[in-house]
Length: 160
Length: 394
Image 1: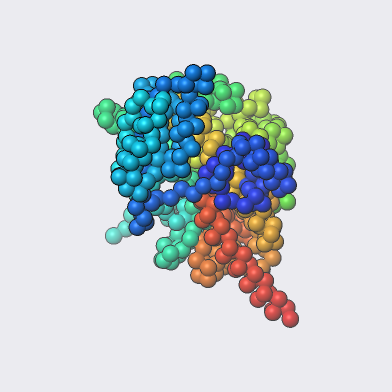
Image 2: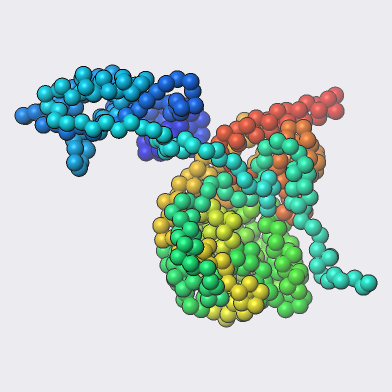
């Protein structure tokens, strides 16, 4: 039941719970309960909106920063991650396998904002050995939604 | 000049759905709930196989009965889904859509004057194809009080000494009705007793919402007298690829192959390569689409109840078949007015046989958002009709 609810609201969190219950063929009260429980358990961590900022007049810039660090004794990577994710401008932090340790995503208004964050805040951290910043030029697909082009129903209007 | 046309063909009335199509096409910005094909795109990995097959220059004919690889995958599919064993060399033929298989099966089996039992409402091609094959259609009317299921009794009562074939179109277009094992067992008993054959059109088999689909070929004694027809259009959203298949006794498939090789040669090659990928790696896609259809089905049943529109609960395909008898209008009048006044296209039940009178086919091969917009209009229209009726009575 939880999996069904999550699969649905992962793609459409705006649906009201009454309607979700209808779609999933479940009892309304139990759907509401499950959702409340999952919020409490932090399985559901938030409800967000996917926005294509490029279509607005707002300036937004996304950067992916590869970060190499030395883990702190006894605390491993978690303590270092905490130093990084506590910055408000940091959107996400992943510990990853491969040639570097963290993938940090940040959003700023301008390239200078991002550069300043890297040079003033991120790089000076004791454990940070090196960084490599990649600016996002165009988003094609995000969270499973294709952001470019239009889809049109090309089917004939009536078919047997 | 003399008449160039064959009477057998000119005598066939134009399809009722065609008439409605013309009407809808003239209407600008109409929303349609009239489509009989999935709203999903063919899953990308399947499309990619089609593209690769072109890139690799696989642009030649395949053998008449279809690619060996594909026939083997179909045999495996029949085995894992229905526990039915078919020899991929002699008992399977790949066709241009399920519709070609229907036509060929009828042509391969019918002698002039032999009767074909055709349950209606149902897909539009069984009756004309029977006539073109020289057979005589005998219509069995599916009833709302039986949830549009075919009953063994109906079959028994309709069988004469000329009856050769029973067409079994379940899960059903346009009603969404299914047959379950008990229904099939009872029908199979009559079929075996009367020594007739079955063409089982199971094109919507993957879209069953009440347990796993069962084929009549699974009932003991039935595989040897059944042609199972299926295809890729509905399950994998591949309508435009035109690819289907038939599985059945070698003796019948052999004769179908004869028709196929002279009329068609072979099914499109790149579609066949794509279909191999669909059968090998498409189960998750099918499950994902089935779940989406099922959600919409539940949504429609729920809003119909709210609007007070009477509708039996269908468990298959992607159609609902609500009754509009309360309004005292013909299906065609209802559909035409609904189109004119609310700009929503639905298909009158009569497009699928005279006994579809009093019903509408509403397709839920649309996004939930589209359905909601259309249903809002339906609710408004129904209110309006009821108000008119109220006035009429007062």
